[in-house]
Every structure is written in C-alpha cells, then in structure tokens.
Image (cartoon, rainbow, N blue to C red; front, side, top):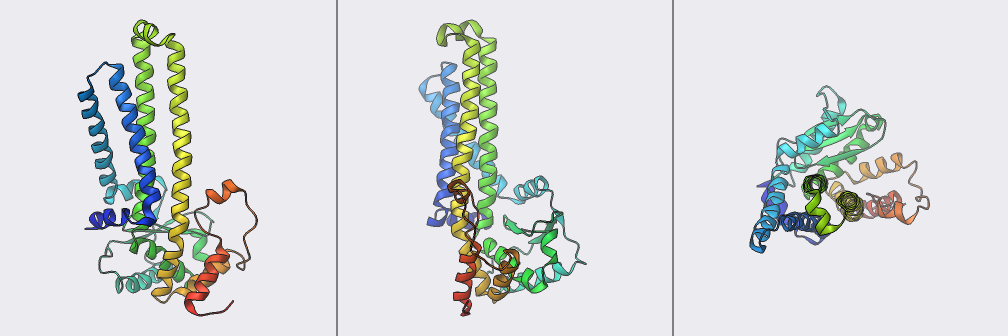
Amino acid sequence: MNIILFFWNLIKPKNWLILLSMIINVGICVALAAYVSYLFGLENRYILYISLGVVGLYALLEIIMLTPVGEAVLRSKMKMKPLPETSFVYSVFETVRARTESFNKWLSPRVKLYYTPTNDVNAFALGSRTVCVTSGLTYLPPSQIEGILAHEFGHINYYDSYVSVVARHGNLLFYIAVVLVTQFISLFAFVFDTAISKRFGNAYFFRLAVNFVGNMLITLVSLISGVLFCARSRIVEYKADAFAAKIGEGRNLRDGLITISGGGAPAKKTSLYEKMMGTHPPTNKRIEKLNALIGYGV
C-alpha cells in the first residue's frame, strides 16, 4: 500500500523536480545502452527492445529500493544503529508516534528510531519506517526533541522520506550504469582495436574520450540532480513544520530551531551555489512561519 501511495504522491507538483531528475537519469542510461547497441551494429528494433529493457530494469530496481531492503541498504551505508529503548529519546519518540498515528492511519507500525554517533545536531527520516537522530541532538531538552521528531514524522506522513530514498538510489543506479558502460566500451575498443581505429580513428584516444565523457556525465548529472533535490527539499520543509504544528508540537519545534540556530538570527549571506545546494530554507524564516501557525508573535 505504501508503494502505491508513494507513486500517487510522486506525481504531485511538489515532487516534479525529483521526477525530472529521474527522467534525466533514465534518459541518459537509455542513450548509453542505445549507443552500445549501435557499436555492435544491432538493428533498430533490437535497440528499441534494449532501451525499453533499461527503462524496465531501472523501474524494477527503484521499486525494490522502496521496500524495507532499500531502507536497510541506506541505513547500513549511513552507519545507523538502533537507539536503545532505555534512552529517554525513545519514550519521546513513542509519544510523537502516537500523535502522528491519530492523523495518519497508514503510518507503518514498524517505524523505528536509529541514531548516528556524531556531534552534529540533526534528525532525518528515510522511507516509511526509519527516523534517525544524531548523538548531538540528544543533548537538547526533551520537549525540543519532541518537536523535531514531529517534523520528521511530517516527512513520513507526506511521503517526502520515500522520495529521498528514490532520489538517493536513482543517482546511485545512474552512476553504476555510466561506469559499467564506459568501462565496457573501453574494453570493446581495446579488444577490437583495429576495427575501432578504422571507424573512429585511434582506438587509444577513443577510449580516453569515452572515459572523459563518462566522468563529465556523472559530474553534470550529479550536479543537476543535487540542485533539483535540494530545491524540492526546501519546499517540503515548511510542510513538515506545519505538520508538527498540526499535531501540537509547533512551539516545541520552534524552540528547538531557535536552540539549534543559536537564537534564530537571520542567516549569514551565502553564495549562489550554497543557496542552490541548501537542503533547508533559512531557519529564521521557518521560525517566523511557525510563530504564525501557533499564533505567537516574535
């Protein structure tokens, strides 16, 4: 059911940037597959079949990554560990979970709390059953942790965390595809050195060109995907804040943001690149919106 609801949410306007990123990834993978087919001199109909197969394989892998397997892979990659139930944060987590369940009957009962051993003060959600806090966050007052966790449950409630899994794995699949294809073409050029030399000139320079283009594709698409993902992330942060306020955690979240930001002062001037790659809107803007939601003046 969660996967069906995810695809229903994926076509909503807030996720169009991620959808565009996925289309770019698939499009380039198809183009690379078609080019390899062309090198082997395959007929157009076979090139079409292979291209459709690439699209199907990409979709299948993404669906697999939407299952608990995908979340487990990311948790392992990000070195998350289950938070002991003896921790006071766990009881805070259970309180927020109960409040969220009263608004979302589809909330997975298997949502679990994890932590990463870092002093950064942060929390995030992945998929439909993973909420993670950093060790640094546990030093905040329990009420503020409650508000921050409510924000993360907001991401789960609106399937934002599911989209994050798709975006992360989509880029990984693209990277693997480009590396495999470029290495395959290089090997092909090495084995069929004479044929390649006749068709494209010097086979050595052809291999260099293929590897250069592959690296440029990875760099360019990673940049484009990163910009699109961050832009979309900034959009959904306000909605997750609003969800926290909706379940009665607006003040706690606002206080937590003030603590984390050192008083909620306006953000320092940043470069255009830093603004484009920022995953969150300015904290002072979020605080202002939360104040408006809870009816509390600055």
